[in-house]
Image (cartoon, rainbow, N blue to C red):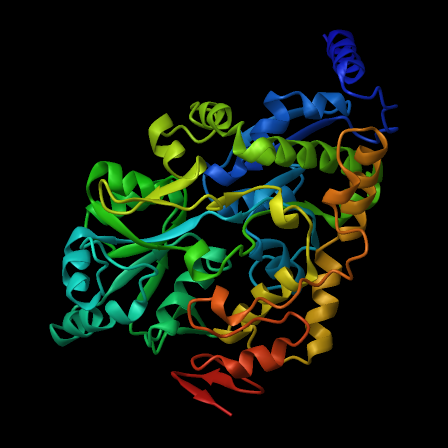
Length: 455
């Protein structure tokens, strides 16, 4: 069987645009984990299109029950790598939660998340939302429209509960960002209290992504922030209304990453480059020719071994538009971006944004100098590995030289105020100045002591 696989890999490699010599792989049988979300697409495409085999890699993809199980699998070596929340490698490396040095040589996508509320909450919000000439709600919708609803719940002695997928998830930070931008307190963490609900107006808790719609329908939560297809699923089931996408909140924000342990990367440098090559090719395929391959990608993702949601549900966001209320479809061509805008390059400034949000809400308990943010980002995000893989692809005729930021210092240009819902620009080169600019959240040397912010 092994000889057959090797022959297949060789034949596939020779069939490509340029018959590249395979790297001398330290390990060629790999198992990667993922969660059933649309943005695991680069892994599925690299497998189904034969890009892993082109590199001589025999990959098994395994869906994981939740983000903690996935992270533990990578740390203990049951998984060689995984589709991860961008906060996971950073949190593990600084010792928040599980401690392990995990690196990111490949960023998987931009955008892709939304915030959904129950039908009941939506009806309560609607009077607070401006309408367009055709009567439809004007987007983006601010959490200021939710604030009177939360106050009404509070007046009745009822907690307002919302779900997010993991304490160090983009979804946690995006939901908190949206709430705070609308004047609502999403709560703080402290070393003694890791609920994240200290001083909260809105109580956030963890729900695994595929369970979000059912948990909303049961009334356990009143809304949630999650990746696709679980916002669109609420629309199709008629149980909730997405109020904002993360693209509308922060244009072209970073999302998932591919994570491996530093130990794996150090022991298997050629294998690491080979897998990054395959993932870059998958990302190119997903975005090329104005997303012409997206219907084929949706068909792959709809299979039970990958995301397992209906084709139409996944297509709703993957093919250039997003449905809010039933029938209210709006063009958002960049809702899912896999390669454009250097989506796959692991920028230090993306890592630093996550670290600022950890600090903002108390997951990082003490103030840190700017240099600390830079050092952590550079220890986790590895554009050097990424560019080595990209160079090989260009030399093999499998990618275009112009598509990669060869001269980047790892920092994006600052995100301008008009691309972010609260009008506050973000510059990864100035993490503490950025934290100072945010009205709600920890700054400087402030700490959460008991139920109070001190300092």
